[in-house]
Image 1 (cartoon, rainbow, N blue to C red):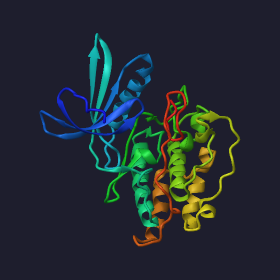
Image 2 (spheres, helix red, strand yellow):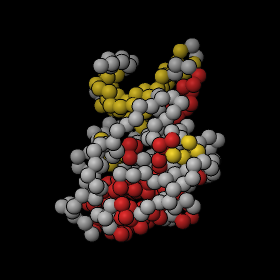
Image 3 (cartoon, rainbow, N blue to C red):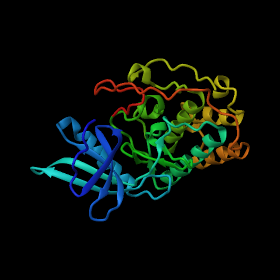
Image 4 (tube, rainbow, N blue to C red):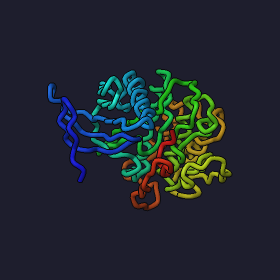
Length: 302
């Protein structure tokens, strides 16, 4: 097993996971004895500059957010070598949870409870003027009490931003992201709907970028099969909501995350914690090996 690194001013406790050219550790700050999650991005060559920029962007956005469902970012530590930033350490709130792609809720009650929280967090983010722009199951943490935390704000931006390159995850990316059009709250609505679709069907929404083709753009989009046709356990109101969320045109999607939360609450009120499993029986998804030039289906294209 790879040994844990030494990071100045911190005791590294464990390795929590990996991101885009980054590694996330559980750390204890030596001065305060406070426990944090620390995202470490190291510059090895010029190709890594964009990942440093994403870490800077994550801090810029997340440091302005304050909501229990949105992961807090406390500090950004820049470590320089010969006047050049050689490493960025992003000090974040520790949350003892597992990503939704690994630990999906198994009941309608659990599913609605999780996504109600996600919608609340995103509603606050939109109210403050930001779009997350990369909502997907492995950017949502869930703990044993079904409490959620939205993570990874590296693609986040101001509402109305037009990006100069495609950024997003193939199986959850909204059409306007691929077309390099302005990003709005409707962009997150699409990705949330695509995440819900996967949770209840074990399938991905057909998008402009096919994850199975490793980021290929321009393939014909297959017709969307409504969730209830793939999984009869999905109630009609939830199936209709998911289909509306993933409409190609932003104007045809639900008007806000608050609207989505209210409709999910109706699903929640009509269910109970003992309801039958919503998704068909499934094994934890395999994560394909990634390469720098061929992102896997759940990789972010930047």
